[in-house]
Image (cartoon, one colour):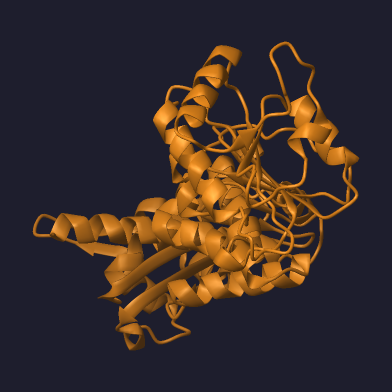
Length: 405
């Protein structure tokens, strides 16, 4: 159990650092101000007038002690001294940490005597090492270093920092808190991760303008880090509540579900079960319904022979569906697949066999049209009509779609 708690704390620390990176970027004043991820420190903030190297610590369940931040301060001093030797411009150093307690042990500001004793000296039975002596840093240089160093051991809690990000995203994109979290924050987390693993330091830098552009995409993107943080069940529940909460009260519409079930995980029975679920939840074919309707589904990436086998089993199991082909050898008929539904004749499901056929049919409608696409790697292109609502969800396992719809 101790190991498990340690792993959870480590993951929380990563997310805290990633979130701090996102917040730092969103907090930049100028569009061309930039942040570098994992270069000098966890985050390097570059504005038109200065550079600040930021080290983040997150110890939600631990007490503050000087020894916890000592290695970071030693590293900063070493970088400061190297910069002096090389003649580089001075930069700011910022250490930010959240602790459960003990913050009163650190009284700010402190002098170089306190710095030496508590942060630069390491004593053991064998010897005492003074980092400033080892680096050859004079007292005058330590005074200059202290002027560049800021320490905050009362940094925001994990949840408070995250909420600050959501508020900034809501303001930046004029969106709802849900869209800020599931759309823009999800995308921001992916971008930060991509930056952090770039081997070239120059590629780990982003301006505020470039970051905003990268996270402002047209799709709801899945990212495994976002799922790890939120939890798959909560992630799917959030999507369901936001987009598919109507349930039995679903309104009439020409509603198309685009599913990408192809690949190494394809299973005919799983796809067949999903089709039946969509039909059951998004059809209204009762005699009491003034305007009976049923959903459309487009399956992407399945070859003709498999589609034929799938449709044969749906037919054998008495699923009332149409596919736009009224007899063997017939041409596709958009009017046939979109014919009015009825309680007696159905159809309970309208199954497209081809993207071009789906596009042709939906572009011919003048009424309300909704597309919900669940894709694994690449979504289909827009249908080319701005009046069609096309919402995309990147879902790694198509079998999980029923947890959303």
